[in-house]
Length: 209
Ligand code: DX5
Ligand code: ZN
Image (tube, rainbow, N blue to C red; front, side, top):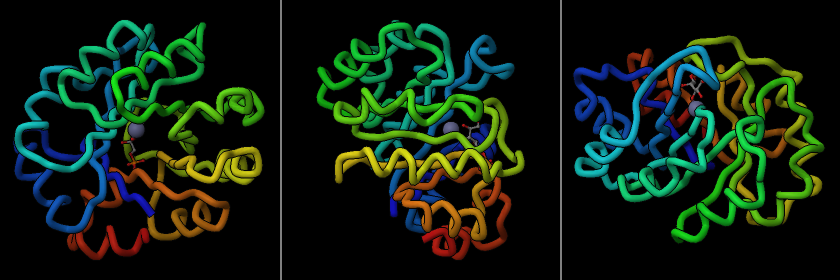
């Protein structure tokens, strides 16, 4: 189980401190939510912040692009230190091309689907993807409620997936919803609020495994 704490719930004025907190508590990856105010109604962080984070942690950087025209920014995020780049199916016109573009840099390629996007649309691309991210909230903000019907897409995708595909879930993950996702076949969990608002971060991360 790959646990990827989302720094969207960290204190951006104390980002190094908050990254070390999850790193020392056993996080596997670091989830970086990039939002552009167009694809989603919120604006967060971009390339320079990823480059700065890269200097202070050895955790793989799991970059979740919630932006329009993600193909324009792949190279910049790779140079900044992204280890996994996940784009949104809904944001691109040529899915095969962007997967190829990401993989040409020797990093992992991920694709995400929003709550209203059916599981079936990903089938043609599964063989080329390293990661498939199922959103269990409407992307844009941390701290929202987990949508169970979105998680029901996991077994549908799992059935068609190659054995090395990482199936990641993002949105409203806590110890209870993590159990649901794991039972459906997810092997990576993103969590923001649940981890960062917890008094015992190590216990919170362990409870997701
Ligand atoms: C939402 C982001 C998530 C967010 C999750 O658009 O993609 O990664 O940080 O936050 P929680 O775990 O609080 O729902
Ligand atoms: Zn995310």
